[in-house]
Every structure is written in C-alpha cells, then in structure tokens.
Image (cartoon, rainbow, N blue to C red):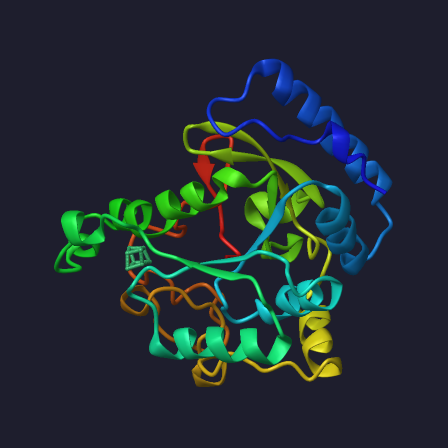
Length: 259
Ligand code: SF4
C-alpha cells in the first residue's frame, strides 16, 4: 500500500522546495510500486492510502469510467464537478443521473463566486477565452482542491502531446508553479477500446451528446460536433488558437485536458 505518511498534507500556499523534493521522491516510489498494476488498483491505492484525494470529473464523454470505479471502491469518494454555468443542459442532467445511478454520495458541484461581478453577461469568452476559462474553471477548481492532498484525472497516454509519457502519479503543476499536490492518472495506459470495453461490460450510461457527434464535451458555446476522421477534440474552441482550458499544465504550458 501507499505510504500515506510521506504524502503532502500542508502545501496549499507555496510549497517549500524541501516538500517538493520529498513529493517528487514519493511520486517516483509510487510509480515504481504501481508500474504493473491495473487502473482499478491505482484508484484503490490512491483513494485508500494517499491522503485526502478527490476525483475531478467533467461528467463528459468518458468520465463515467472513473466515476464507476470510484463508486465501487467508495461511494463517499469526493467528486468535484466544475459547473461553469455555460455547460450543455445535457451535461447537467447527465451529472445528476449518473451520480444517482452509481450511488455517488459526495459529489461537490462548484461554481466561481465572482462570475456575476466579472462576466455578468457571459461575454468574456468572445474577447478572451483564456480569461473566461480561468474565471469559470481553473480558479474555482484550484480553490476547491485547496483542502485535498491530490486529485484524480482521466488523462491517457493515447491522447498524445505531453500525455504520451504520462505516469500514474505526478506532481501537480499550474501556470504559476507546482502546488505540492499529487495528480493521479489511473487510465494513463488505457487505449480507446479499453474505455469502450469498460463501459460496455459495466453497462454504463453514455453522455447523450456522444451519439450526436461530440466525442469531447466542454462548455456549450465552445464545443461543436466533429466530423468522421477529425481529431476527437477538433470541436473544442473550433477555429480558435486555443486547445486547452488550463486545468492541466506541464512546465508552465497548458496541455490537453481530460477533464
Ligand atoms: Fe468560457 Fe469557453 Fe472556457 Fe467555457 S470553455 S470557460 S465558455 S472560454
């Protein structure tokens, strides 16, 4: 089992270099320990022995896999869902239906408190999508994660880019530096067919927009359907010079988000 005593517990504001060094060592040890383990084992190890861990979920196209694993391991697993107030109605309905069906008993729906003040008409996305994502997604998520030792993501190696070398455990980075928290990627080694097979075998409900051509689902104004042969994320911020919302960062750069 994971050595919980060595994992971060007091790193909310500016972790010390000593802490980050210890955390990096711990991450290496965890990756070595779980190298040949399954996604479920990684989930279980993280949730039971790695401190106070949240599952961050967009309740998007593939989210139900990790939500199901969490529900089986512990229905009280904290699930953090960021409602940007610009999501598809289908996502909001799916979030409630999936939570109820899986028996998840600790879903925390979070929203930025300053949207009315900073973007009262929802127009910020027209002038500055990065600022809109920071306001509606990144900032409230970071605030919500302040009480956690780490969080679980749905990112996978097959999504390429910076994810091609993704490990099960890593140190969380933001645009302003490392937070001192763990990030855990139980599905790092899964292929698309593994995701589909898991959903089929467990008869999990699909997000209704997947069947309508949305393999990647974010906010309604910034997500469009994709055509056959297009990259699954081609419908996100289509025709804009933006690929990421800013939740996942490596070496100060945004990378593809699985949230
Ligand atoms: Fe705003 Fe679009 Fe980002 Fe949603 S995805 S927070 S609408 S810029």
